[in-house]
Image (cartoon, rainbow, N blue to C red; front, side, top):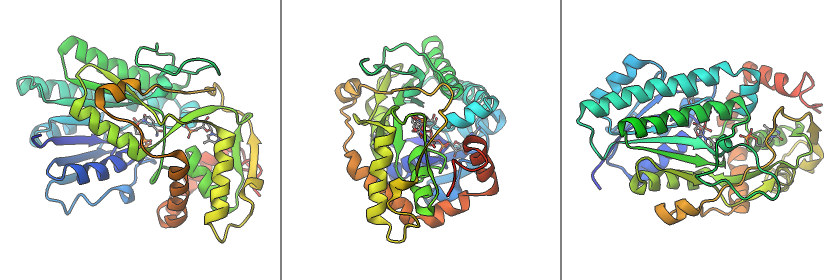
Length: 361
Ligand code: NAD
Ligand code: TYD
C-alpha cells in the first residue's frame, strides 16, 4: 500500500494517543498530523514523540476553526482524516450539554465541510478517507434478552453525549450519500487501557483504590457494558481504513459483556494483588453504591459479525488479561495521572458525586 497523510483529530486523548502509537509502529512512513484543542481531556503527556519524527507534527487547535483546518488540509496534503476529537463523557454531558453540541455536531460539521471541499478541489480521489470514530451508545439501551446492536439497529440515543455523536454520524452519512465523500463509520463499545482520563469507570476505580478513596458504583451496579481493550479497537480502525467500503459502518466490540459491579469487584482483586501499599484493603471494602446516573443505559451489547466477515478483524485481548495489565499500568504511571487530579477535576468530582465524594473515607 502507498503511504498516507493522516490528520488525526483528538490525538492527545485516550483512544487517539493509543491509535498514534499503533500507527507509528505499523505505518512508519506515513505522515501524521495531530490536531487537538487540549481540552481538560487532552494531554501532551499522552502523545508519543511526534516532534522528533520528521513525518509527525502536533498542532494545538480546534476542529471548529475553519481557517486553521483548511490550511492544514492543504499545506499537509491530507488524504485521510481520522476523527476522534469529541466531548466524550456522559456525566459531563448531563451537567452541561452545550459543549457537546458545539464540538461533536458543529465542530464535526465544520471539519467535514473543510474535508469535503479539499477532496473536491483535489478531483475527488477514490483513496481519500474520512474515518468517523463513533460509539455503540447511539443505539440506546438494550433489555436483558435483546439481541446485540447490529449496523442496521435504529439510532435511539439517550444521553446528550450519545445524541451529539448520533448527530455527528448523520452528517457524515449524509455527506457520503449526497456528495460521495468516501466515509467510514465505526461504532465501538466501551474502551479501556492506558492513558484513559480518570473520570471514566476503570481509571476512576484504579486511582481511587490506589488512594484509598471510595469506589462509587451507580444505582444497583447491574448495568452491563461490553468492554474492549483500546489496542483491539486501534487494530480495528486500521482494518477499517485498509479494507472498509466507503459509505459503510462497522460495529466493534470486545465480545465481553459484564455487569459494572462484577467488573469493579474483579478490578479490586487485581488491586489487592498488585499494589503492595494499598491504603485500604481489601479494596472491595471501598465500594459504595451511589445515586444512579439520570437516563443511565441499562445494557450495551454489540455484534462484531460484520467486522469479522468484511474486515477480517476480531478482538484478541482477553478481558481478564487486559484488565490486570491496565490496573498495573495505573499503578506504575502515577506520574501520568497525579497531575490530572487538579482543582478543576476535584470540582467536577464534587458535582457528580456530592460534597463528600461518595462518602469518601
Ligand atoms: P477523550 O475525551 O479521551 O479525548 C478527546 C480528545 O479530543 C481530547 O484530546 C480533547 O482535547 C480533544 N478535543 C475535544 N474537543 C476538541 C475540539 N473542539 N477540537 C479539537 N480537539 C478537541 O476521548 P476518547 O475516549 O479518546 O474518545 C475518542 C473518540 O472515540 C470520541 O469521538 C468518542 O466519542 C469515541 N468513542 C469513545 C469510546 C470510549 O470508550 N472511550 C468508545 C467508542 C467511541
Ligand atoms: P463510563 O466509563 O462513564 O462509560 P459510559 O457511560 O460511556 O458507558 O461508565 C461505564 C459504566 O460505569 C456506566 O454504566 C456507568 C458506570 N459508572 C459507575 O457506576 N460509577 C462511576 O463512577 C462511573 C464514572 C461510571
